[in-house]
Image (cartoon, rainbow, N blue to C red; front, side, top):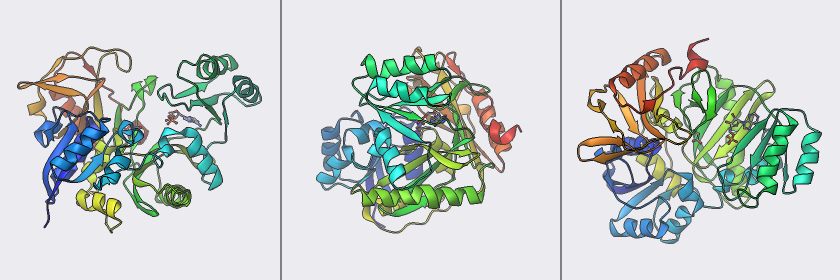
Length: 418
Ligand code: AMP
Ligand code: GLY
């Protein structure tokens, strides 16, 4: 068997889970992570190159004879890391800048869905404040406003009143707070959300197991939106028929559409879907592995992930086999997150954990592990049922001691508490 040196770009829990899956492969020789974190450092050599330093990443891959590079974060895709690696003749797993527009431009994604008849919320895009306001005034409330400029971050406002909608439109289109942009005005949909990630290589699509994220900061889905406070897999409320529909009517047609539009997609296509009373619809696409969904999905993958990454990058064949057991993971976040928070607080008890902990934002200082981000750790339980997986995750959370962390205790409530 030929072994490969592998480079993973990124520094979060998602990349830790990718490194973990890679380290189970007999095909992995040496694994590097750029820049990695304190948890990743136990399985891979971390190199001090940031995820957007494209030239340094290319130079490193050449120098260390990297046979496969895997991209985690969107920021690296957006600066064209895949294009640069391909131009240098280096094998890389991830979409080009043009294909990553399915995530980086809401308007591109919405127009593609309209053109290829993929079910999504009705929408219109505006650059003019006056036109956007006039349109919103004719629409029912609440209404959904999504900023679509280059300076991403402001994201999504769900306006309950015309005053809220007006304030958001002013922010997005008049005040130039985020640079000149566009706003997509969308119909408000209701229903449970779920994440459907697929490996995609041109027209070929290999579905992964489903997962659900929890975006709100506090129990009961209260508080501000975050990058995700916990996740679990599988999802009892999504039927086999729902899954088939999502694959045949959404993920596969979008993969074919990207080929038809001249920007074939290679990598992970992530459908953020909602099961509405009118059927399953797309809320958003991402052009990469979800975080924290990846940390509950990849532990269930039994197949060799190197085969899959190479099949996507080279156009080969792959089969995906899954562990039937359920996984449930809980984020430990710095107090104050998603607002401002302290860093550098010591974490103890990691050696007492019985299951698996992925590091999201940590830093090693000698033998000590310190907090270094908003989301800090992701504690995963695995069991025959989701209830057992949650019990194990909560037991491990209790073994970790740190003065400055908080977590949700109700992860999985949609599946467990009703
Ligand atoms: P997005 O960044 O597009 O994923 O939106 C962030 C969150 O806003 C989603 O996870 C949904 O909870 C909510 N959201 C976005 N679009 C809609 C919509 N059309 N209807 C209802 N909720 C939405
Ligand atoms: N968990 C949502 C995301 O990765 O964007």
